Length: 106
Length: 122
Image (cartoon, rainbow over all chains, first blue to last red; front, side, top):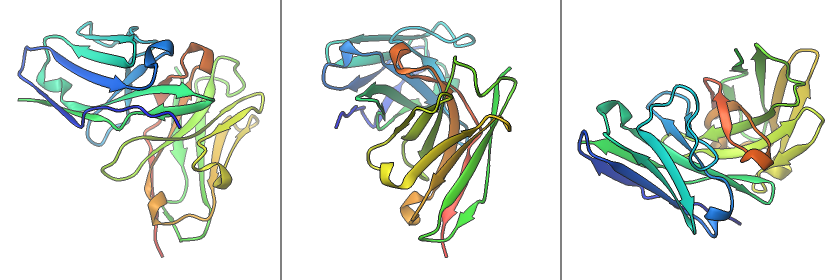
């Protein structure tokens, strides 16, 4: 079965750039998306179709997807960006989520 | 504006059936624009897709849960339902209802309900 692998945790200083990776076999050949989840809240879509931002998502969130890796990049990271982030794709009519990455803004 | 609200028992006994309903407001469940999905999250853990349904009746299930899951739509009530049978403590989780695009567009979930915590315990 298809799997998506994320690092369990990423740390970043305020104002710096955070990059969260998501790895899967030939992931670049399919769409990837990303969700942000803060404690006690429902997930929120922040990137879809590799690099598109839904309405209301700040421009500092961007995405890319090539080869075996999709990347969520947060430029000028703010304290409010501290959250869990999940990548997601689909394969063989099955939706797959990555294990999640806890972003800490130190 | 589309809104989703999950409802159902918060406590289910082992071996019984978990039943949840998602009420859709602000839009029609019969719209060709949406797929309707269920995702769950055990306490302190990550997201797991349970399954999705299109209003036409097409259903897609997580292979690891397929033998125990049924997702259905009630167009008269604008509701999507989830049934998971033979539950164990491992099925304790927050259950989310979410709307999504179809597979061709990337199958991303652009709107989520608030979630419903279901505990499996005797």
